[in-house]
Image (cartoon, rainbow, N blue to C red; front, side, top):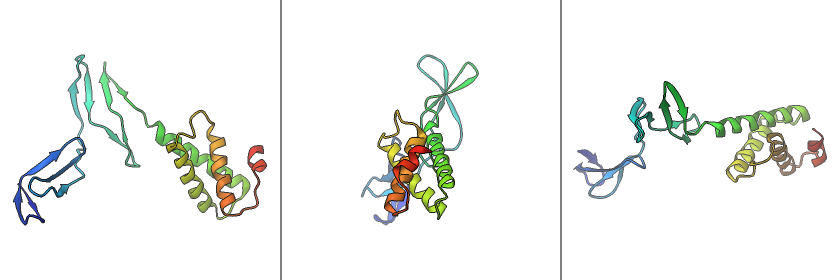
Length: 157
C-alpha cells in the first residue's frame, strides 16, 4: 500500500515492470517512475548457461543490451560502441577546432558535437568516416555563425 495524493488515501499499486513505473490502481496517477536495481543478479538461460539479468545503463542514461556469462567469461550482448563513437566524434571535432583556431572554441565544440549526435541518431554516420562527419558538423557551425571558413578548408585537413 502506497499513499496517493490524488485519492488522498493508501492505495494498491499497479506495477508495469517492463516500463519501470508503478501507478495508483484507483486513479492511474504515476506514483513511482524510476524503479531500478543496482545489484547484480544471475539466472539460467534456455540452454542452461548462466547469464546476467538486467541491462547496463551508461553515464548518458542510455540503456545498453544484456550481458551473458558463459564458461567463466562475460559476453556483452551489445557493447558501448555508441558512446565510444560519440566520444570519438567529439575528439575529432575538438582537434579540428584547435587546428583552425576557431574561437570561442568551447561553443564551437559543443554546437558541432550536438550536430554530430543528431547525425548519429539519423543514421548519417553509417559508412562514413568519423573525421568527415565531424568536419561536416563543424562546417555547418561555421556557416551558421558566419565564420570565414570554406568547405575546401575542411576537405584539405
